[in-house]
Length: 97
Image (cartoon, rainbow, N blue to C red; front, side, top):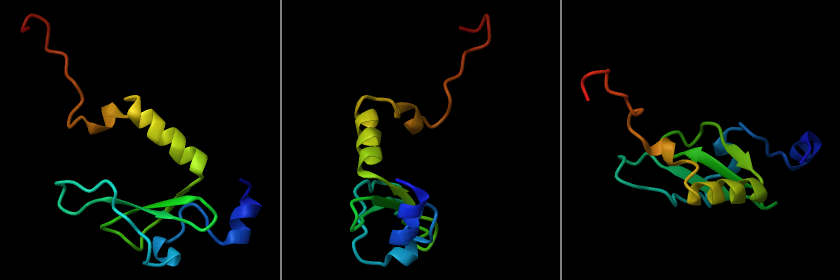
């Protein structure tokens, strides 16, 4: 996709999510995190918008279907497992293990 394509459709990465309207947002990944969810919206041209549920007027990240497909495939293969670690693993000091 070129920047000209984004200008024509009026949708661009980082735009205010509120400019995409309030209808159609979904929270497919909600959990026990106090309502802080990633929300998705399928756009008319096939792209997918993501926003933070606690900041619905904040920036929207816009992805092509191919980018979303690659991301989900990577998650399924475990390539994002490190993102769920609460703390980086530590190596115990020498002589204490």
